[in-house]
Image 1: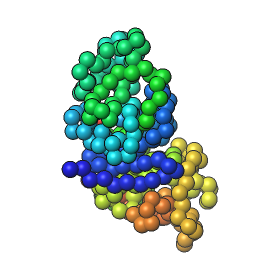
Image 2: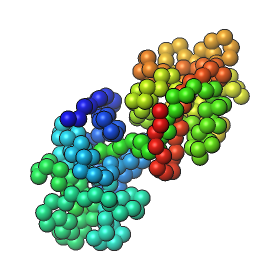
Image 3: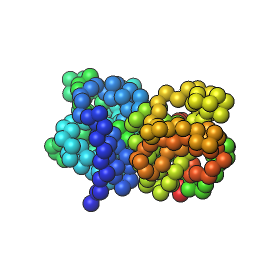
Length: 263
C-alpha cells in the first residue's frame, strides 16, 4: 500500500510516495512540451523502470484524475527502437496487447491510460495528454553530518557536484521534501552575500533567481549572517545565518549521473 504526502501549489500537484517524488499537471500538452515543462523545473518526464514504479505512477494518475499521461519514451529516431529522452533503451515495458502498432504511421511517443489499467500505448507525439514529472533522486546527495558553509561547498565539489541551487518554487518544495525524508534538519543552500551585504549570489557569483525568505529575513542579525539555509519550520522558508555555523548538506548533480542519496 502506497502512502502519499500531497501539496497543492498554483493549481499543480506534488506527490511523495515511499520511493519517489512526483509533480503532476493535468493541463494537456504534446510530448515535446511535456519534456520541456519538466526540464524547466529541473525535473524530468517520468521514467518507468519496473512494475512497482508502473503501478505507483498509475495509482497517482488515477487518484488525481489524470486520464492519459505522457511517459518518458519514444521511437522517433528509429522506428521500433524505444528510448528515453537521454537516448537510453527502455529497461521495462508494459505494452497493451497489439501495442506498439504505429497506427497511421506516426505513433512515436509513449502514454499510459486509465483502461486497461497501467498498460502502455504508442501515440502521436503531437496529441495532448497530461504530464507527470519526477525529481531525479539519483542527482541529489544528502549528508546529515554538520559542517560550515565553505566545507559544504568543498564537500559537494569534491564529489563533482554543487551545493544545491533553488531556481524556483517547485524545486524548493522537492528539496525540502528530500530533506524531510532524510531528517536533515537545517541544511545549507547555494547562496551568500559575503562579498556585498544584501546582494545574494551563488557560488558562481550569479544572482539568486528565486528567493523564499521567511518574514523579516534576511536580517543579518549580529552583523555576520552571510550564508543561506532552509529549516524544517516554518516549512521550506529561508534564513540568513552565520557561515561558520554547522548544518546538513544537500549536493546536486545537474548532469543526471547516478549518485545515491546518503544519510
